[in-house]
Length: 350
Ligand SMILES: O=C(O)CCC(=O)N[C@@H](CCC(=O)O)C(=O)O
Ligand SMILES: [Zn+2]
Image (cartoon, rainbow, N blue to C red; front, top):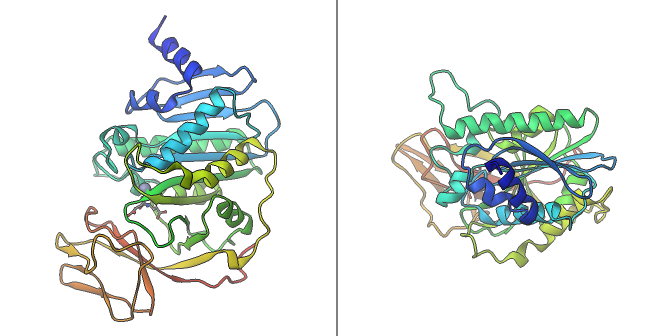
């Protein structure tokens, strides 16, 4: 038995694509097999597995996790879905591509190995004069896998991509999503209804392009795409999985049903925020005046100090300006803080 057929046998018996990916940190030879219910399974690479059921489908779904390796709850959710599909417990009604973004960073229990993968999409992996590394190569490949997946599905189908994360800090609004900048296109109520069903009632509307995975699939492939933050980072084994029951049930319904009926849209179900500004770290000497325990969505009074970057002080310029993803430890030139302000729904939503 070749090594290839041995791992395929094991995968078909146990459905454990996560372990297979972790055992092959940066590369796994492609292979295909068919489940007893007819679903075609294609392993494109380590961490990248596609399922194509035999029935007619309408939505091409990408579910990614481990873009940051220490964000374990989303990895556990996707691991469970993949196992249920391979073992025949979950019959698919839609095409699905699962991605574990950075298997080596899962193994070392860190956000990334050399470089933050979620700052390398939309072409930022390949820059003249900048040395490639494993994460840059991986970002380029992941873009290609997503691109090929949507292309094989064809035009004029629904495309969605939920890039699942957990936040470093606790959050006043425990689960929230980032809606990438849509360049003037309208936001979609149906997507907010889906998020609500996942237990996510808080959404941040970005107002500029980004180098994130979700912005890439939204901008390049016109997918309904979100970064979804499902709570706070915890090591494997320490997640209270009951907190993700709604997310799991909704994702499971999305991929296994022809159509899912969500609660009717009601703006009062949501807390929406507009991103007010993004503060980058440009100096080694960068700090926040608040403690490491300050939660995402903590609001500040107009005039309060928000961050100090070398000689530059940033003050809240709007009453209630709230902090998201403060991280003084990012590489120079990268985003160290987003701030948000409440958003009233306009008519730019369909
Ligand atoms: O908690 C944090 O500081 C980071 C959590 C995280 O990984 N968030 C994503 C958000 C991506 C986006 O803006 O769409 C990230 O920082 O990459
Ligand atoms: Zn993350």
